[in-house]
Image 1: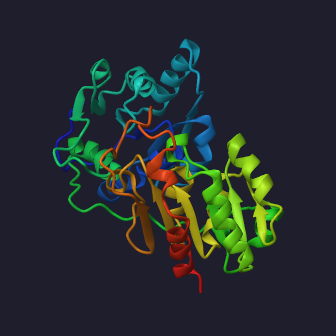
Image 2 (image 1 turned 60 degrees about the horizontal axis):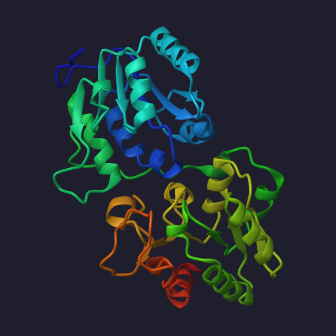
Length: 340
C-alpha cells in the first residue's frame, strides 16, 4: 500500500522497537507526532517480553505485542497470524535490526518502512537512510525520520511527556520512601563497562551525600550493580533498591527524588519522563546523539577527548579514561545545585 501524503490512516499501524529501555523512550516523540497527525488510528507496539511494561507506559499506544527474545519459526508464524488478524497494513520498524527485519517481513503488511541497511533491505519496501545528512543527529530525530515516508513533517519534535508515576500501583518499600526529601537516586552502573563510572567514584559520591544526611536511593539490575549496592547500603541514609524493579516503580522512585545521577543507560532516559533534575555522565557516547531528550534541569558531564565517540569494544586506555576520569567533585557540585 502506498499512501498519499495527508490521506488518513483508517487501518491499524504497527511500530517495532524490540529493545532497550532508552531506545524505546527515544521513539516516544515520533509516536506523539503520528498521533497528532492521525489521532483515530489504533497504534500497536512490538517489544521483547521483558520490555512490555515500558511499552505500556507510552502515551498513545493502544496495544502492546510481545515476542520472545529467542524466536523460532513457530514464534514468527504466530506473530504473522496475529498481525493478519489485526488487519495491520503498515509497519514502521524503528529498530531495523536482523530480528525486527524478519518480523517486519513476516507481518505481510503492504507498507513496510525501515532503515536502509546492508543485508536487510529485503524486509522493507520504503527505505530511509540509516544516518541523517545532518549527522551527528539525536536518536530521537533519527527515528522520527521514518515518519517522513508517510507524510509527517519532523521539523519540530515534541518533548517527552512527564509521566504521573505516583498514580501507578507500587510495592510497599517504594511507596514508603516517596515523600522522603531531598533524596538522590543513583544508578550504580551502565549498559556496559565502557559507560561505567566505576566503583571508587560511586563510593566517594555516596559517602559525601551520606555524610550530609541526604537520603540516597540506589538502583541497578546487574550482578555488579547489586553487589555494589550491598556494600554501599551499609552507610547511613543509603537505601538499596537494586535488583528487580519494575519500570513503574523506577519511574516513581525517580519522580519523587530531588535529583537523578547516572550514566548513559535505560534508567537515565526513563528519568527523562519525570520532572526530576538529571546529572548525566557521558563517556564513549555523545550526548548530542544519545543525551536525555530534554533541556530543562539537565547537567551533562563529559570530558573532551579525541577518541570520543568510540565503538565500545576496546579502549585505548585500560581504565576507560573518558568515564573514570570524570571528577567526583564535579558530579557532587552538580548534584548539590539541585538539592534545596
